[in-house]
Image (tube, rainbow, N blue to C red; front, side):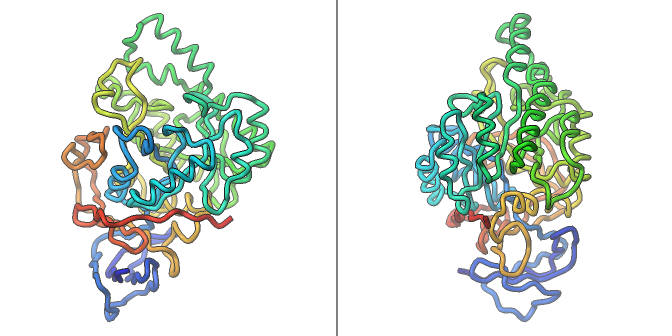
Length: 439
């Protein structure tokens, strides 16, 4: 493997920033020092004026592979990921077939080995009938369990109380939970359909998938995790009301943790009239006041991670009326730069790399440390760029951030010591590794 020397970097890691040089050999960080100018290397990167962060570990993606490759696949979306500074992804089980057995999960790992530019892992999906599969997972090679406590399709919805009790009492791996109360959503939607038929205005999406639907389900999940002392990670919080259910303190030490997503931190319900289905996602984007509360919760430690919930759909699908337009947004390529519009570099490193590594106990990743894998993101904080159809790399070919000018750009992304993205180009020869876990 090539050796890489990064010089003159502003190294951002574990709450501080400092000038440093960094030498990479055999895929790992071999040396960090104030000056390594006499160190020979195959590739030298002068990082003067740029920030060097640990690569983002995105614990929440939907790459649609296998079964839905017309929307996206593991190669196309991990190409976009490295262009956005993401070095590892943890993918969700709602593919075709749904990943509810360990055999199906291993099939996904085999696909990823030939396609993923980033490192990768996969969640095993919980159902009402697969507790034996969940208990058979290898904790060292599988990131965790995905649990839909509402608002899912197929066999991934877990709506039996005894099954929930069994999962929270018997599973020791992180349980990543989608919290929306199905009954509340169905009642709200029935009212809107009686009023509007199929053509419900998109601004009513957060009325249907309401604050109360989120709060009831999240409260239920927190109660289960608390009673059973389970390790639970609540995905994509959207409301200020839910934040009261979580501790206001930093990791480590918390067993109940929470995630926010870039689109919930950027948009508000004021954007529906203009953007419609392009910001239709589940749970729904809520009010500007909720957005402000979510941003503050990242700073004060209530919310522990940022995951993208990257979920591409075809442009033509998004042109459908409300009832048939699918929910989900492609956002992974713009995640880090969007966060830098309102968060300091140190907080971005904590929420996108350190804390995902801590929560999932990811082995030798998530920090810039000697001996760790060289998963790194170099950011030019003074090079603005505007998102357009011409520069997004998603297979679906569009982004909800189109037309937005961000003040920062991703200069380079290194995956396992390989230069996966630089100068606006993805290195398509790079392949990531299966993530391992220190459990």
